[in-house]
Image (tube, rainbow, N blue to C red; front, side, top):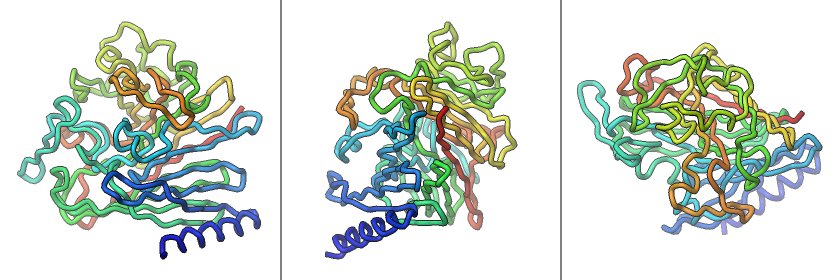
Length: 377
């Protein structure tokens, strides 16, 4: 009865806000997990009509409706229309990733004289928090209307020893959809023991529209003069290599597919682009990291972040891993039908002393913000 009343009150308040020309947040049921845990969907809507659907399972962005050059809204994120597919088939579509986004070599790291062993769920590497990372948790949530932004705050406590990590980690993430057509993601965490933390969101984008072909014609700029080359396990070698003269040079806008099949050892290792770029902006300061333009619809996405790196992944393993994924539009997602731009600290930082540290100490606070800004031209 209480849950039904909560949904009713939420819908009533959202309707009243909409009539008053204010941003709105509505809450609806999105089914339940296989274990029977209820999942809710929070729909954020700004005064321009742009909207974002975020579910409590994995803190996942299920849908993101953005305008094209004619003002027509279209869903630009890959995903499913039910929880069961997210549980069984999702390659991290739209989810919150933690405790550690990206890879840790051999599933091991040492901290304060002790070695910690994690799951090796990606070949010999630990990936995106392990077997049951934050993407597979049902988060607690509450709606937020802040100024002229509609949002939702999610929180989760990762217990000491969960997936092999030390310390009780309290995590809070707030999504805000602004009237500037920005999806802002604010991350916050505290711990009672030293532990690595590297949170991110794993949205797959197709600015032409979810389920509408590949992303090779998207024009990408990444403000990074260097990237971190990887070995056969896709672990950084420790080198910060220049992008100049390589297929990894996106310092000027370049079609994603223009050089993706070039004869280059790093493209061969990743099956295309699946690499961390070292951003030119000062570490810890908010700045433009990347911009993507889709010429058919005119949609533009800019990524601003306080993080030192960004992982550009070109959807190389969609379909090629043998899993058929039918998206919200009813169309199967095929090879390179989506791309990711995951703001982050560098992969394997706990084992790379020359990389910016990802260790959160007791008494300290992990805080970082990333903004995805949408427009059209």
